Each structure stands twice: as C-alpha cells, then as structure tokens.
Length: 288
Image 1 (cartoon, rainbow, N blue to C red):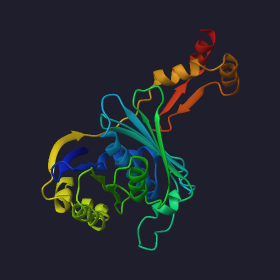
Image 2: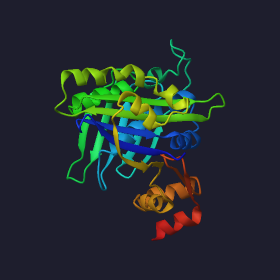
Image 3: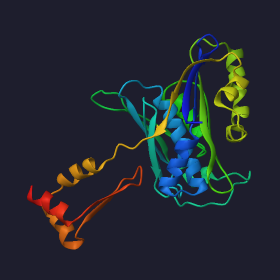
Image 4: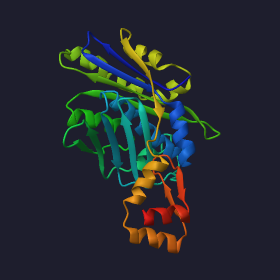
C-alpha cells in the first residue's frame, strides 16, 4: 500500500485527528542516507510528525522541523509542506547505540535531552513563524506533544513509530496526532488521555498489519475520516539549482576549485544526491 495521510474529526468536531502511514518514504530515507536502525527510527518519527504538521498548513505553506538534543545523532532536520511532501536528514546517520532498558532502539540516547525542538513555518508572510520548546524526552512523540501544548496551546496526543525488521528494512512507519479543541468536557479529555498508553505501542500496531483507520477507531470509534491523501519523499534539489549556487560564488573561489580539484562536487544534505561539475563546466561559469 502506498503511503498516505488521513484527516478526521470526532466528538462533534471538537477533536481533530491526523494519521500518516509512511513506511515507503521512511524506507527511501533509510536507503538514501544509509542510516542505522536507531538513526532511521529518529528520522522516520520526525518525518511522520512533520507530515502531519504540514497537513495543518494550506496552499504553498511549508515548515521545517529542527531537533538539536545534544546527542550523538547530531541535528535532525525535516522539511514538509501542505502537499504531503517531505525530505530530511540527520547529521550522523551511522549512530549506533545498544538497545535501551526496555529492549527498544535507543532513540532518546541518540537524540539527547539537552537542547530544543524548533519549528519554522513559512506561511507566506514577511517573516517566518518560529516556535521552540526544550526537549523533554528525546523519544520525540512526547517532545512534539509538549510543543503542541506549550507553543500552540493545543493539548494533543502524539504517537510516532518506526519498525525496523531483522534484515534492516523498514517494516512499518507512521504516526497519529489527536488534538483537543475548545469545548470538551473534563470526562472527554480524560477519555482522550487514556488513549496514550494504547497509542504508545503504535510501532507494534502498525507492524501487526493494522491500518491507520483501524488503530484510530480503536480509541475513537465514532471518528469521521474526512480526507485521505498521498504523501511522499520529495527533494526540491536539482542540477540547475546547484549550478545557480555555484554561479553565485566569487569567481576567485571557482578558479580555486578548478586549480585544486579540476572539478566541483556538491552533495544535497536532504537526499544525498551528488552533482558533479567538470573542469569545462567550471570554466564556463568563470567566463560567463
């Protein structure tokens, strides 16, 4: 099944529900960046969260998730937009840690807890919106939950999961966000809070073959699914964009590249694509 995102409501529109099945695109991130299981668990969770946040945008709006927790994975950066497109990378895709005390991939150990989760939204205004909260867990679902509560004042339940198979392929990946809108009673809020323990095992639920809809209906039987849209890995880099970047360099820098290396190679952080420009290409740029 192709990757997809669903949007829905429950409790007479007072609860917003988002879910994403992102197994394929997480596998693509894994393949492109050569990540360890721990690194792709962190990157895949971040990508799922970014896609669901992107679904709250509209038109040409887009956002960037930056996670800097001080751990050995370094920085996690993910871009997503309102069209269901995502790309991302981690500074250290080779980070390899022992399993944690619960026998799970040690995402918190890789991410660290001495830093911040930053969200930058490009809403087409003069300046981007910036929100930032301290990292409180490093497991990421709890950190996005904290972000929604503190930075956007929206109580939320966030579940994120990536299941890496024994052969290091991605067996399942995805996430769910349930948000409480104004007007819920205390009893209804308590009911939603009780979902946290069930959704905490989302990795196992997805790995067992359950669909997003089945998982969501287990905790919100009366949910109304309003929309189902495809999502995908998509990088906006191209040879033309890289060429424009080289053109913008000082001619002296281009001459130094030509003299020292005889060519230029540029690697995109987000998709790991390599763009090579030979000596003739550089000479044309210098002479133009």
